[in-house]
Length: 455
Image (cartoon, rainbow, N blue to C red; front, side, top):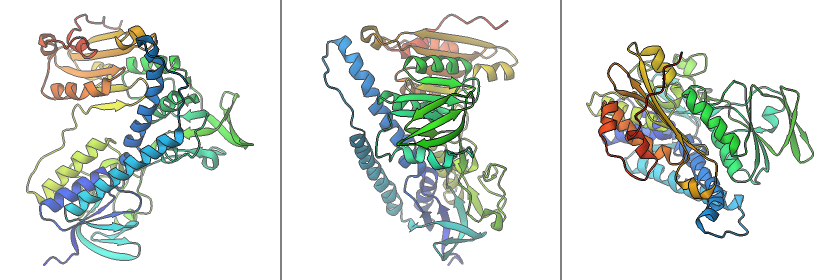
């Protein structure tokens, strides 16, 4: 018999923690999971899933407006925020149950409470100590609020947005990343007056520059007041509303100030320092390529390591770790060509590297193919929304190394492109592929004209 209560004790029942735990249990390990908030973690409860449900709701507003161009008559269209939130809550509750049942069905012991690490083989949950041969930390991340006056008293983050009792008619969104852009788009689509503020020169830092410029133009056309090189200095409450004082001296009257300025690894209070687990300056747990921390019996994966902060990556890491430790399968996560999407309105989808990175790293040069067009859907709707597509090709090998898209349905297209890129698709393979007509996707196999190299 083992000297420990469990073979594996996982702290955090989010995507990565649940996947690692149930796969390990499936391999015969004795596994326990501690969760203090909700099963499914950020993604299911206050992240990707509810966010996309609200974005779907916002997109219907455009659909009603577009319908007139196709002969439909829509009168007295209105939106019920509380009905949307109630429907969202019901779906999230269903998903919570699925995550719990996945664990229970795999034979995992569940502890509902806050867990902390006592030492290399001991975890404490609400005063009870439990031992394990290995401990896995998969606690994810947490949104930040700045130290500006009024921000912590009156500002909200993605954690609170999904539970607002009243729809805010005037919204200020602080941030220029994908979360900020998504919330600006969904509140704008649902009828709010939205101002988005970003401290930098252009939104979506880290994305391809053509995408960044194109998206900024599109969201401004949609009605969002996007202001760059601007931040909030302070917030004050006046009557039933708020006033945001900006760095340029102007003020904004609003009903809600949403901060989407970044997330930090959720490691505070876990007992990592006392156990000897090393973290970086941001609080992220340092791990090697086996997801092992500075304490050999303690592992970490997903957003708490602050490397590739995407739900599917955490899932893959959890599966690989469980297979290595308990399934006698030595394999690695493929971090190449990870597709990602921004569910803004219009959405962004991308896989591979940007043109800027390609030019900086590919010695043989780069070929660029791009297109910008009005999609077929809007030829009759009259809406001025366009689609952008771009291929980045290694000139020496002719392999497609980057694909970047903005426009309706682009997230649904990018997964197949990622498969092709991981299979080593070249530009010639694209050229030899018959297009699916009439679709926006066919543009990827009909691009023939190279963009001129920059001077």
